[in-house]
Image 1 (cartoon, rainbow, N blue to C red):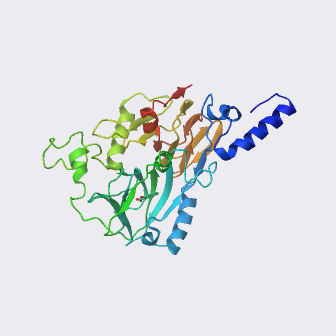
Image 2: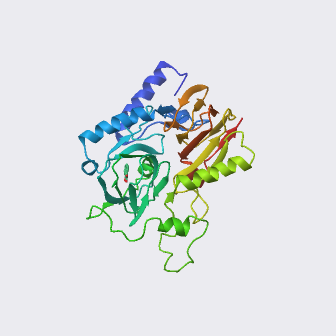
Image 3: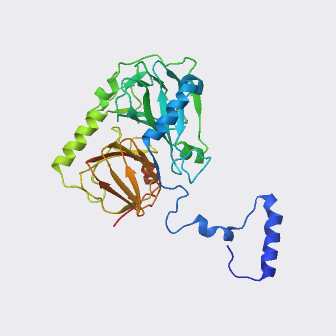
Length: 350
Ligand code: 1HN
């Protein structure tokens, strides 16, 4: 914005702006400082979704619309700072999905990468390219870009999970492609758990063997709670705590040791009872889910109480600390994967 300057100059500039606007021309000097900020100032705000509250609305939706009719019965967790944009932080989308007993969500595939983090229910499954990932609470299941996926709930209980997708990132690049399979569900082409056995134990089928059937860049799609919780517990029992993170483990893609998907990183943390993490900022927008315990998130000094299954969005560069009232276990996902590829990622530990 032009600060000083005569009324005459203002009038002349305004006339210039009005004349050139229809030609697709606008002055940089009016917006430069908003475009290039000294530190990130996210349009997204810190926000907590209490699980019981979200669940209540989701079950009401379940009374009115079927999963099949909706294609996906999901309540978007939309950041209150970015209304209408279907974003939880500027680069990522999150939603809470419900599949009722006997329902299916039909098969499709798209350029967007998705993760599911199971909140409730056991025994429903996502089929990824013909192989079922049978879900239990706090499992992480991936449907990487362009892999076919449908969901089904053959149990007698509702199944609820948090979806995390890179929808706003794909939108930014105008690179969305999607297809529906003519059949509602993908034919089953492999036994449930097959991929986990082949790629989930720090091993992989011999290259070029018939067992080496998954996409080379993205073979693994199921990270069960049972496995990650045991690893996190062992880490906490056997090593010094990181003062800023607590005990933390990242999920990796076994193909390359990098992030779980090209645009989304995910991790888990354990913060011991009574522990307070030291202040930390990072440039990734992060979504946390409380897996176990109770505590407080202090975000730029503001307190957010945390209980099991609550979801907390922490946009870029907010100063974050956690206080654990009981042992606190958190799952988090963020756009760190994208930012690292673009050499944008930063963090600051106080
Ligand atoms: C999607 O494919 C799923 O497969 C969930 O469950 C949410 C939101 C936008 C676009 C695709 C799913 C989605 C989605």
